[in-house]
Image (cartoon, rainbow, N blue to C red):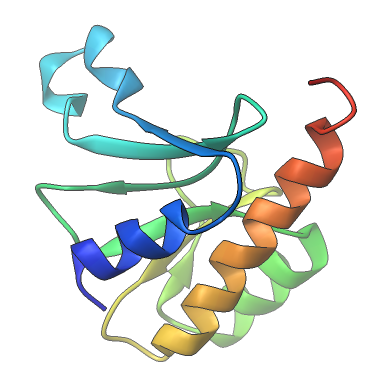
Length: 116
């Protein structure tokens, strides 16, 4: 999966907005592209170091993936219970990554759609 394919996939979901919000904290974070639905993050990746994608997930599924797949690990700056880093080129397929991105979108949309 390349960067444009993942970006197009995220933008194909309803009501998605993309932003680079972290540059205000430090210029080195300007390259973090974040996708939002209902004003909340569901997916992010570094455009300058495109080695993986971080998504929100179901805690049970996150635990299973981090235990069984070497390409899946906790993201160092996000909740280990609710967010997972999926690294490309490892033992997780692009198909599985797309499914996890879609699930992340669904989790966030379901939780926040009533608030919008």
